[in-house]
Image 1 (cartoon, one colour):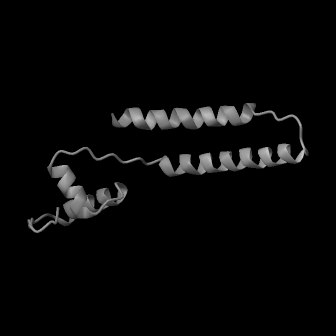
Image 2 (cartoon, helix red, strand yellow; image 1 turned 180 degrees about the vertical axis):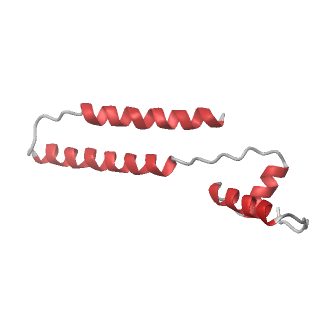
Length: 102
């Protein structure tokens, strides 16, 4: 639906700064942030998600490198215990983030 209506409000510089910063944290526009806040929609901010994504990418890269070497016959036995532990830690961190928001 096309947005055609406007509302103007007055606020202090501190309030404006807080709204702007919160919209940046939520990775949304100021308008969307204010609308969601005013209409009691839940706004979820994941602070540590980028670190977890980076860890998952590195882990995936390591698994891909190991797979390539196994397929080339350069290695025959792979110990994935460290990889399993790291993946388990990432999984637990993601679950913790999810349960905080529910």
